[in-house]
Every structure is written in structure tokens, then in C-alpha cells.
Length: 120
Image (tube, rainbow, N blue to C red; front, side):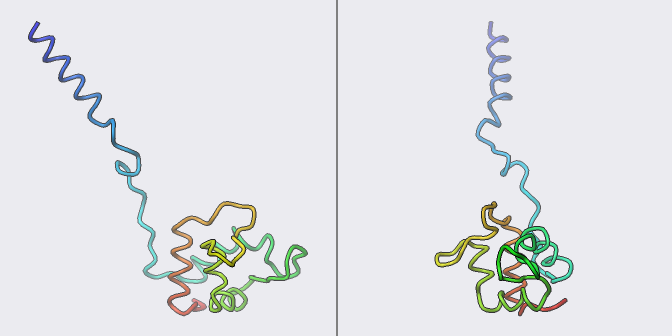
């Protein structure tokens, strides 16, 4: 009988040991690398995937053109890019009708803006 209690105790401990663990704690996501963000390799793909379906040259959806470094940088420097991607009050949240950009993509854009929005 004593052996059975010990086995039950051990089994219960094995199965209950991770009850309060969650996936984020057990398997943390890769860190977002914002150390050397570049327009060409980091920012342009984000814009292509999330913005240009509505904000390209000749778009009939809106007059806001974000195509190319000069146009996107202009909006980044005046604060509107940060406002819309962070869904700040007074700004139209973007992408409109879609999910907010990932935290990592927002961090990359913010880091690029903070570094002066270079065309690199």
C-alpha cells in the first residue's frame, strides 16, 4: 500500500508539474533584431506586404502614396507613420480594416525612423 501511494505521488507530480506553464514562458519567441534596420531589407518588405495595396502610386483607394523611400520617409519624419501603425489617438489605424502590424515590424519601423529614416 505504501508503494502505491509513492507511485501515485510521483505520477501526480509529473503530470501536474507544468500545469501553470504557458507557451510564451516555455518557448519564448525569437527576439526582434532592431540593431541594424535597413530600408531595403527590412522596411520596404513590410511596406510592400501591408501598405502598397492601397498606398501605391496611382491607387484609386487613397491619395496617400507610400511607394518608394522618399514618400515613406516624408510621412515617417512628420510622425504620421508612427501614429497610424501604433493606432494612436487622432490617427487612422493602419492597415485599415486589417490586423495591427506585428510588434516586431512596428519596432523595426520605429528604429528606422529613430535612426533618421535612411535610404539604406
